Image 1: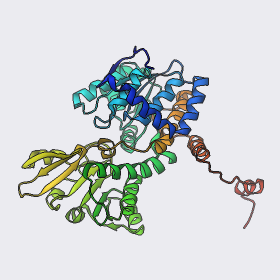
Image 2: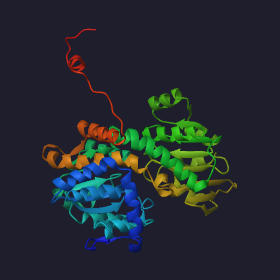
Image 3: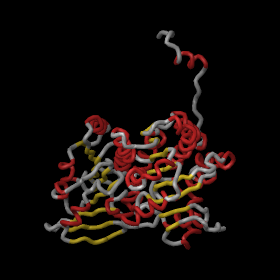
Length: 424
């Protein structure tokens, strides 16, 4: 039954709320750890009187994080961190079924994106949740009057952590931010298994192409790159890895992948996926040597990893030939295919990570936000790690939910590990 809508919102279609509610509840079935946290929050109300502004992907999984925070007493405002990832039915359900303020529409332009971001900040938040650092950046540029209200916040993704690290180095960050992305239960599972599966899912949906037997180029071999490479190899692709980090390149080579520079890889690749968090990873010199029909996508973060602007300016023609797939024909007749406009492919052309993976990431977020309320007064401005005990608790709860038991140390083992006096 719909709630009385008294919250602010700017969404695409309120009539989608019932459908969105079904999908949110489906995701909830696969998020048992977050469900346990939500049940405790509902009893203890740790966020009573706390205003939280979140700039995140507006998906069914994020919806369940918002519901957990609301159960804990928080006043919420959510905006989208990516215009193509917004699920309009989810946004409608959050507003009209759960009474949470949402400012998000799929496909909104840049001006609309920042209008939504500012609308979320209008609640004068005490805590911020960010996915890419745009919310924090706005607070430090055009909404500085709100900084005095901020206790701290959580950052969800690698790109955001990179930007926050630079802000900390420059002394620009004015409040504590917690690198939720860097927890083991986030980057080891969400980045690797989530990105790997969902990126391939998006490529299948967009192209219906055969991966087996193809040459599949993965640009970047961090946790996300590892996941994409593993899944592509599992589907029968000949996987090539490109890197700028010699240690990661060596790791890829010793795992059996071909490693070469990106210009050489551009000549032989059938599929390309960028997963670096940097800009201009695929650019003019790569496009110049790619074969006719080459397909490329971005699973990093912002839509600058692939130089889409060059394609827009220099292509002879452009046409949308399949779901979220644009074909650019160059002057020499070659056709290059870009998925999801160069934005995050797993959210732009598919549904993002499976809920069972996001269960861990968003449980990290929820427990870290609860801890932050108590710890903020003792934390200095800058980027901080999530306490190890939160990470371990999420892993413990996830194992328990999956019916898995593990060993415990015996008293003798504890003594051995905690004493230097025992010899060999």
